[in-house]
Image (cartoon, rainbow, N blue to C red; front, side):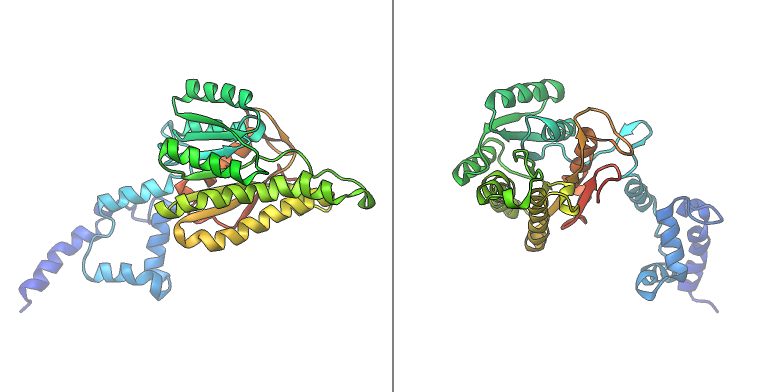
Length: 322
């Protein structure tokens, strides 16, 4: 004579097996995430399928409507658009410092972050141009923008810039290291002087980036979250000019080492290598990268969506990455 418990299990079994209940077609799940879960539960390794096997044995309807809604949200995160809505990178209310934010790639990045609701400090040496860009960003996106004049070669100025940002906004979530003078051009070996390499290339870019990184880390450690994106260059991967290779390869190595030190504190460090970038507010294509292409990549890397990306270097060079 079956027990009352067995009767109850048999009574509930059809409800759990029903494709209407779990939201699956008779032939399998509708999307790739559910298909993976379905296949893993049947054929996967023991570590993968065990939770799903246990769920079936206990007659637990794992594809509850709430769980299904969560899975559908996760699968749509990286779609460009869904039902005519923008993808939310969860950047609203975050605070970012963008160095070199008054022109070119830096200005495009600042604009893209502001469009996501990020509050900004844009830093460079030309205060007049910074104020003009800040005014444009406020009018266009309705976010707070703080222009700060600084020189990356001076540690005191870097520390003051970071402290001023923290005082104004109360936190620092993102650092985009982009403020370095143009350099890295080719010249004959015997013409390379110590002054040109150190003062014109390594100090403003490598050490300048490091000074900014070092200054923001205490704030990010305290809040348990941070995104640091270093803009280097494809010269790090190409055998072209010694100054460009030295300074961009050094930035890449610094980011890799910093990611190891900071990862346990919820801080990611990534490097982006632009190639020849056209300063245009349009998406480029093969052989033609634009500042908007760079801004799109940096915006993603600056977001909580990029939690698993750290220590990596990504080329945005339309196929010409070396």
